[in-house]
Image 1 (cartoon, rainbow, N blue to C red):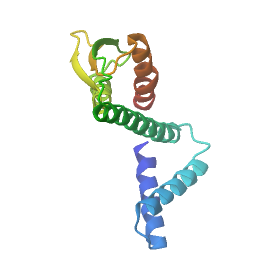
Image 2 (spheres, rainbow, N blue to C red):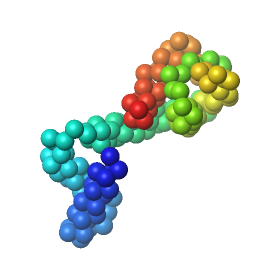
Image 3 (cartoon, rainbow, N blue to C red):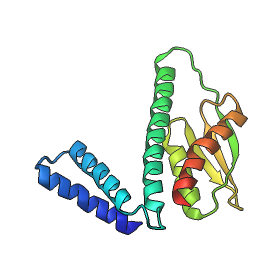
Length: 158
């Protein structure tokens, strides 16, 4: 997988050098062309992890940006209106993540969205305690994290 990623980077830099335009959009276009070329060349090989993980990583990044913007708008709206809409609460979130890396990455991503903060991880590393600023329904919040951040992260990592 690392070999394909490095080859894809080399193809993207080659594209930038051949076109003579050094910009992010040109580099991303070259990366996409390189990804497609590598996919066509490696269709018959048994290891397709790189070609399944890259779209999942891009999808996770876009989902994270959407959630970040949504949470920022919610907090900003609450700040500029005279009435407070906060309903703070602490949620006991049962995790599917097992390793220290998975737990750390999940807790970091959750904490990066405004309105949430990781308070603690249980001793048996099966539960996260999350402080939520806008908690309307605990079960809905748990399901949103489980179907959103955790599922997507574990698909990428595992």
